[in-house]
Length: 217
Image 1 (cartoon, one colour):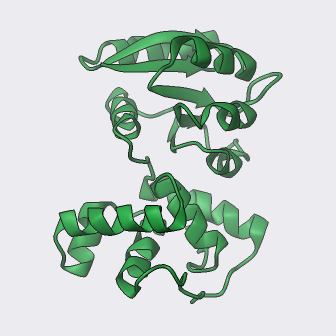
Image 2 (cartoon, rainbow, N blue to C red):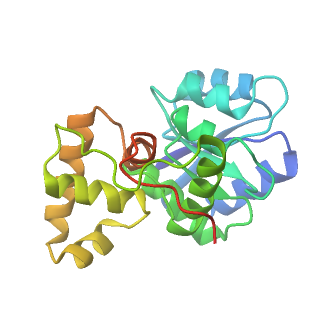
């Protein structure tokens, strides 16, 4: 059973997500928090597998709360994206992914499962928005940045596709390789670069200049 803590300053949002998640056979909501400070305290007390974390909360916001708990608990950032300006910062703080507050019950549950399994939620549709914001705030990196010396040519190619938001299955199809081979490459990339998951790998690819941010569609 995946144990979830919901952190949002709106009681109706917390209650709604609780109902949706508790209806899943493999997920249970073990607690709620109305702000970042309470989220940190409740996380230490309850030791959830995943925290659904709103970005904008009074007092200690979701970014700082994520930074404080990311070493022990995986975090999925809740966002309205058209309004939130801090999602990138939340990912840099250690969040494992993000999901829109308007997501369906199925998408929300799947996001919890993906993150709880140790993977990162990096949906291509949202990644484009994220990278669009990144390009505006950080400028445009070289189109073909230097390959990190510790990575092989194939690992660099895989990292580039991860940064574009492709799944392992999509990368395997693109490179005509077995999906297990791609999983091995991703694991090697994370180990060599000292990164936790695909989200951090994608951020690394853009910050290092390996991949150039595209303008949002």
